[in-house]
Image (cartoon, rainbow, N blue to C red):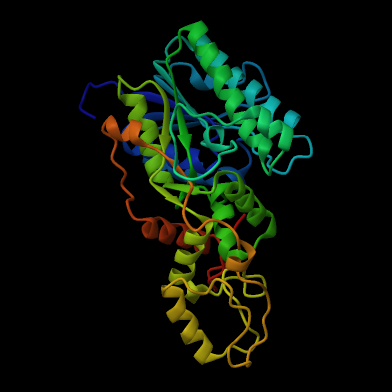
Length: 392
């Protein structure tokens, strides 16, 4: 920033979260002054990364709560841009209508009303999700879903597939925010992330990170979420968290940007994702007593291990249940058997053509590079004395 040039100010809600923490870092590096909101500024466990980020530039940490009207007034006051990232995340709620749908809609509108009162906000970026795009019954293959696509709220409420409340909340919150913006003269842009992976400043990540790492850890609750996604959409769409946040800033600064923007760099199936992770991360033997990615044995047969490594490279271990020489005892079922019957090719393509067409370029073009960063992030969050992956 040149001498005499005014520093732009941005507010990022939900600073204790995964996506927001990486966005704050990016904005500070770009020279922004940043305000961020957290529910409890005194919670050092959740907010320690924010103290570290203050070394990069001016970062103010402000208390705010989505459930409290006017709670975001101080945070957005004087800001040029507001990034609404905070949202309730309670995927296992017994009452999704109350804890996800109503809480997300009302929380989004509370923050939007604060933006309207501020009078300085040039543009609001609402971080939603492709869960608001892709959760709908689709017959056959070859579907391309873009920003004109919406998840089917009636279908989701009637059939209640896994995490249905999350998808409904994203659709209804986005539409409510859009109506409010139009009625109050607010320039609103919506960013629709897919499975967002990779390292971020925050030490504990929710949603996409533990769900994907469950292919290594065997976490049953997280695997169930992955199964639900595959069963409805037939695909797992992925982007790196840095690319997502670069896209957020891109649509904020690009004056011609408007409407919705999907941010997706890769489309795969669970089987393709599991095959790639099996090929790349045999050395981890992650949580060996519960690993679902590969069959693990109490007495490991060296010959079988070598054979497994060779066949993994050709992704031919889909239904192996026992050591061929009989020297090992099977501890658990491999992930390929768990997801038997899932399609080997994606039946849906989530398209990012709109944002790419406006000039955005993804930094992480290799899925392997994204996964390497994800696994290292998970490993570093575990014990430094071993190579276990932490999923939560």
